[in-house]
Length: 302
Picture 1 (cartoon, rainbow, N blue to C red):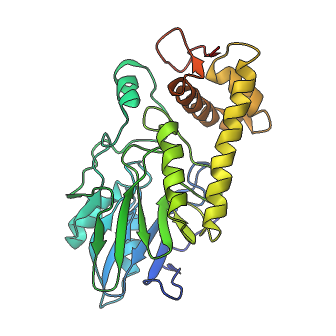
Picture 2: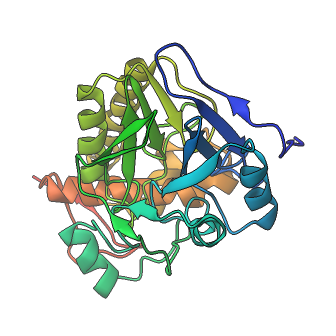
């Protein structure tokens, strides 16, 4: 699909600040049609998720501004390579500071910190290792200008430093909740225990719509969040069913519970299964005799 860089999509509706979306042309199985960059405001403009290090997309974001507009804030949901690298170039071009929860290691849970240090768990989506924030946001902080205000919520799980941004009944949900696909939770950056807690916290705020990091607007936000939580619980049940009959690795389980999924997606699916197994270990519902690794053999707890 060919995308037009110079045509931002207007997502404004009654009662909302002015919101536009510019889609980066970086399609993949993990990004859909590409990364969504959002522009909020009519004069002082915030950009959420500038995207990958792509000069064409940088030009597209800048070209979306009208002569009386300027970028004053750059907000990043999380430090994956498809969301954050362009923030620094955009900041240098505009003088706008970069707001985020922190660098790529910020917010990582204790168990994932331990796995990062001792287990060979490289893989999943690429980390923006050099990302840094000019302004560090805390859970509940509000960033605002003359005609918009965004409240930041720390929502780890897909990534330790993941944040969502709320304005009215709309939430910019990053990669926590999307409409076209379930989010990849890939240890040690992804933590399923945190992910489920973040989804439930988002559900508790009862948003009307979600503007995700990839894909279309999610208008039935609470229904989608409920589905995602239930989907994860069903996967958990499937994994426990396998473990009730035999011990198995994440790859072994993937072949059973993802048998209807194209095999080229199995590596990502295996990361999700591993995330579930680590979560089940945290719940004392599964265990492994050896330190956790991608090929660790797990068994159901008695």
